[in-house]
Length: 141
Image (tube, rainbow, N blue to C red; front, side):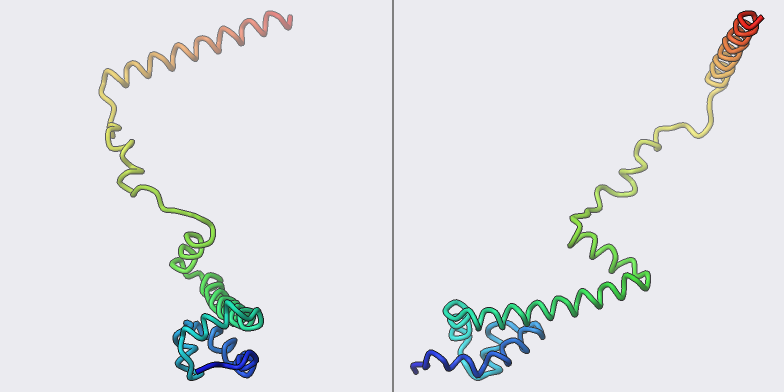
């Protein structure tokens, strides 16, 4: 069946409305009584049809993003993570186990030898500070 070149015009509003509801070319074709091939052809051949389809898709995105932001504003962590992953290229890297791996080998208590060594180092640093304080005091007088 041959379509007249302007036949698509009467379907523009339906195409936009259907696209705004997330319908595919096939769904739109079923709704308006045409083959999905025809709808795809019209989108390629007629800028008005493609514009109506894109406007509808944009309306759907605005609606969905609005709902997503409502959830984010309510503190929905899953919605926030979804947004970050899909729109901000955020990725969860590694696992908690990987993050803690460096700490797994850290002893929770120090050996007596380590405690003695740390004590010695602290005393040495304290002595150096006292020596510096003494030098400053002699310079000032």
